[in-house]
Length: 360
Image (cartoon, rainbow, N blue to C red):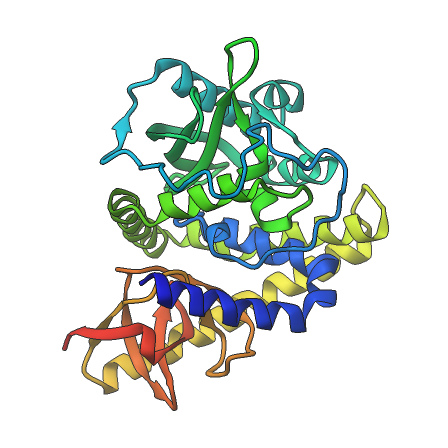
């Protein structure tokens, strides 16, 4: 599995380098946002492409670790769930502030938070009512008072009854005053955008953590629960696949142009994009249903970890999202070296070498 992961990362890096200029503009914000919207069921950043650092200042982790410090380090055998009251309180504080767009409070819980991330949070908080049923699964980090934390929660969107099961990750440390804080260098936003660079040793530790059997089992369960929740509620699905991506596109455009407000033209473009996505989704769903009627239903399981699901059966096609080891999908057909699957109601293609048939 480690070799497969390395091969995958190498291929991903080559692809990333080819489109680096494109990704460093607005599309990199959109891409990362969509990955978040597909609900962080796995932390894609742990094996994702390494973005070029945009800031040279304030880029060192507070851990100040040296490469090779993991040689004698051993992860805990299993999680501790909700055993640290102070840590749970910190995570609760962070998410309450996030939902309310309370940046003053959020910055006391997590640091550093860039201006761009603050703007990103402001956009998402317009649609999020609350984060419910928060539960922290922790292992000890690299230094005394540090923790690797998988956080489960249900996202409650405004005016939508159903909630979306989600899994996130945080690296929590203790400051000089003995107070816990979230090292925001390793949060979802910076892991995707790399506005600040990462400590390579902590980064390596997080990748080890993501391969722990408890972590894999937890994120597989959350991914399954998330897929069921989205499939069962049209309003929730529309929020995740249409409304939020459109809002993020408008925000990304404002970042590139230096404007803090949405222009009428941008809003119209977002509405047109939303309509186009809804139309495409309806067409894909119809095609999938027709195919399922004609063919015997086949289920495939993903054997690789963090595998790209693409819109077309081509290695350079746009990415719909990620598939993770243990995820199962309905097979819709085959095309060359690609397996056609039903990916959360959309037609997607995954390299056949990363799946196996488990049910016919």
